[in-house]
Length: 204
Image (cartoon, rainbow, N blue to C red; front, side, top):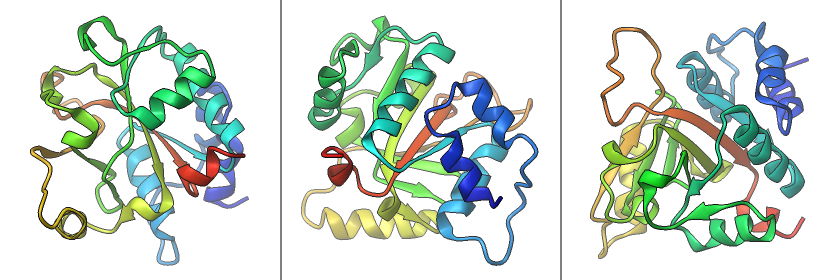
């Protein structure tokens, strides 16, 4: 079974089951790896969690599994589309007072394949400083948001927001070794839920 199929099977599982499913998977980048597999491998090598969700039901099951496994009671979410998703599935969230929340749920601008990083902007963070937000961060993204490099991501930002650049653009990553400080605000416990197209997935 190839790497991507294992990741698809893992979607919606309990977190520990997911780790068991892919723990023996070889995460070194191979020449024929697609860009989504490259991102997934780099994220997992950095101790992030990656779930490939083909349908809306997989997305909901995986969010619930993460909430249970990571002891998340209240999510912090400021994006209306994601708030609607949470409301329709009776999931508790706050759009203010992030200090009362256990994790952030957001979309992203781009997923950076080469580094396993996530590019965020004020569209996802509002006026908040990333360093102050909860350490647990759940990202919902779709495949068209994966780019090869940070430069590609910045180029995409400049193209997408030609005359209205976001006030904040930053990247976050998972902690991949003991040298990295837990106090680094851009190091988070990251879980990425990747779907083919979030807008389409809403109706499935």
